[in-house]
Length: 209
Ligand code: T5A
Image 1 (cartoon, protein in one colour):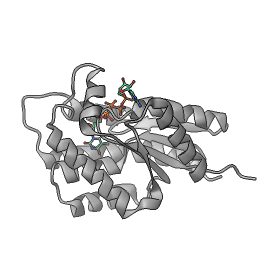
Image 2 (tube, rainbow, N blue to C red; image 1 turned 90 degrees about the vertical axis):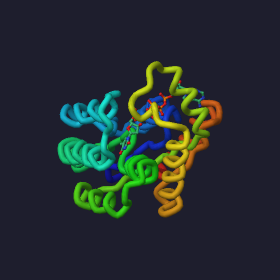
Image 3 (cartoon, rainbow, N blue to C red; image 1 turned 135 degrees about the vertical axis):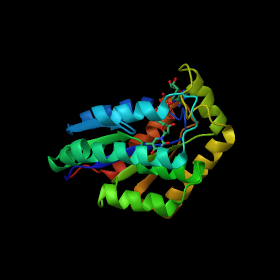
Image 4 (spheres, helix red, strand yellow; image 1 turned 60 degrees about the vertical axis):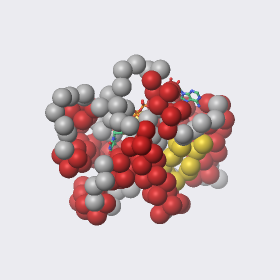
């Protein structure tokens, strides 16, 4: 089977990190060679950009600057890690990707979606996930879960109304291209969430006979 590109998306505290561990175990059980990575980040340079983006600071961050930093990190990540892995037959499992940009910078910050699409086309050159697991959760429940992990970063300090827009942005993406997404009800108990994730993985990537 050709190497696949799987992304995991959702608003704050939805359980991406927790469920990525579960997906890794599923990939291992299938003896699939893979790398697990994240955005923003995934390479030393892109991780430095992540730190710039997430760090709390006095200075107001301009939304266009934020968008360009996200895509600068993505260009480095795609060209030095993701594409070379896929070309070598290695699957890529990524915590967030461009859906997050449409949701956070597009729907959340209100930036022009045509500008995001322009950058997407230029940076990705046709690369898109084969499957995106979109974990959906009530915003307040997600923030409550995220708060258990400690101090909030620059994004997590946004208002609930910002995350409501981000959630709507994700739903809009799913509605535009439903065949790429598995929508997972992430407010359920972890065991139920993982049953749904396993079903989605088996549906998208059935065992070859
Ligand atoms: N960003 C990113 C942009 O603005 N634009 C972009 O293009 C990109 C790529 C990145 C930030 O960057 C922004 C968006 C983000 O704000 P991040 O670290 O990827 O940050 O995102 P976070 O949402 O902050 O990730 P978190 O680590 O906070 O949340 P997770 O990984 O979704 O949640 P997780 O697994 O740590 O779970 C949180 C807690 O809930 C528990 C876990 O045990 C944990 O304690 N939990 C559950 N509890 C009960 N029931 C369940 N079903 C549970 N699942 C998890």
